[in-house]
Amino acid sequence: MGLQTVEMEPTNELSQWFDGLITRFRLEAAKLSEDQRKRIPNTDNYLEPCQVEIFWLEQPEYQTIISSRFADRPDREIIINGPYKGYDFIDKVDAVLRKPRWTKPLPKSAPFVVASKRSTLADVMYGIIANQIRQITTSLFTKIERVGPAGGQILTSESWVGLFTGNIAKTDPVAMVDQILASAKAHAAQVSITQSQPQPPAEVQAIQAAIGYVYPPITIGSLPEPQTLREFLNPGIHYFSMMKKALDGKVGSERIVFTRDGLMAATTTKKPIAVRIFNVISALMLLEGVPVQAIRESEIGQGTLDPATRELRGWGMSGSTPRTMHLQERMFRRLSWFQESRPSISETELSAVVEKADKILSHPKKAEELILWLESNTHFQNAEFAPSFVISWILIERNLSNSWESFLGEKNVRGDRKHKLVNAGVWPADSVLETLNLAGVMAEREYKTLMELKSKRNSFVHEGSIITMDDASDCLNLATEIMKHDLEGLL
Image (tube, rainbow, N blue to C red; front, side, top):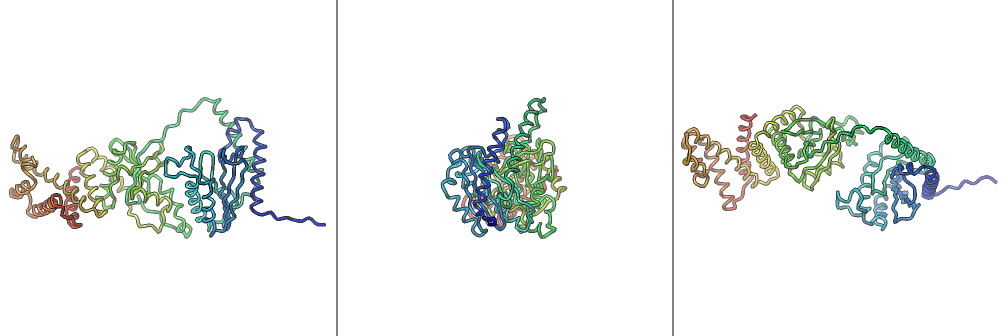
């Protein structure tokens, strides 16, 4: 009688593979020293207690493998979900994540508790699974040469979520155990050697930086163009090159670094200083024709720079303004070629802007006026015409006051008389305009323009009249002329 071959169900095969892995792992781990066992990474630790749960996708074949060491779950618990067809995968996974083992609260040690409103294991898994689905989607037209791990992410301090290409049951569990434990032994040996040797000098700490983004988004230099169909379909391959340093300059007492994607990093942890630097630079960009807006203190993030190269090491944004939400969305789109077109500024032009900002920041009053002008532009771009008009008028009145001061100086007006004439309560803007016009200092056209704008300002403030787009535009255009003239003299 011939031998009979019995085919095993895929889920049974996978369960038995993990059961055998755990058995082998514990037998071999028992041979290690206590110090060596401490060096087993949390991502591959199958000592008691341990659990394994798999979400299995077929066509293309991927497995999401959650390895955990939860004390409140049974030891050696192995749960296989799937294999699921692509059209069933999302709904099937969602149904599993609604079960009690997934809806329990996150432990306080979980890395997501403070950073967001996520409160359960399922809440975090939604984000992890979504990222893995995006990763799988981009690989549909990629030839998979061999099965193997494709990255992973921490879930809690006791659990890890890995993505595996293919079916892990087709690999050798003995080789996997040997590899994990060999790594633990090597780590323990390295620690022992390190402890017996003189300690090297402490590593230079990363530079702490305040982070902002030019908004609306710009590109420093040119955006890389897709050269092949694969690049066109998967533009994310250029994402990390766009986060490389494009410029490293000096502004005031700080350094400022720009990435090619328009991220700004100032070497300060004080948000008011960072906001001032970012907005002076943004205003100068706007004067160069790049349509940017003011950044708010609530939009400032934190990051670190490499102390040697000042390349960006890591960063995060804060708040939920249109700017930060847009940036968070772009983190998933990864520079899609189908996104809205982005203006660009060359490295040479940006370098000139930073040099001007360095000079302007040494003149606090002019820096403040330049930021006000940027605020007026920002309100105008957002169709907030009343605040744009009011801020522009503030700049116009300041300029008028400077002109009046110069006129009184030329006429050698001093003492009590000057004190009376510069007192707005005694000699208001209306009287100043009349005097300068009658004295021939102010041209008739300028006089009429200012009188009309002043009348609209008074009607808005005292009577609640509507400020139209044309009103705001006229006022902003005049403020822009003044700002350009003042900066020419300063720079």
